[in-house]
Length: 121
Image 1 (cartoon, rainbow, N blue to C red):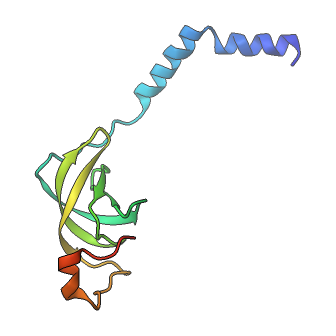
Image 2 (cartoon, helix red, strand yellow):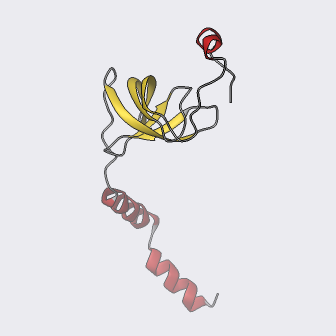
């Protein structure tokens, strides 16, 4: 880069303290994180996808992320009990399937599923 261009770029960026204050100002402009449900509350969510390890991922109406327990299928509308509150998401256990998803099927070995828990994904 020509000397004049580099100097102009440095002048635009300014010293480090100015850059960090600019970053802090930008962080303040970001929208606040959505409110997380409290532990022990039951909420109704729709499973959006399955994450690595077989846990379902859903979002509340307010936009908070919910990590669901095993045995959820994308598209299912489930009633969940919030078991743990983290910094950016909550963990929940499925208590009832209110509406099955498009990929949901009844297992042909349903009487065995209750005792063994089924196969892992």
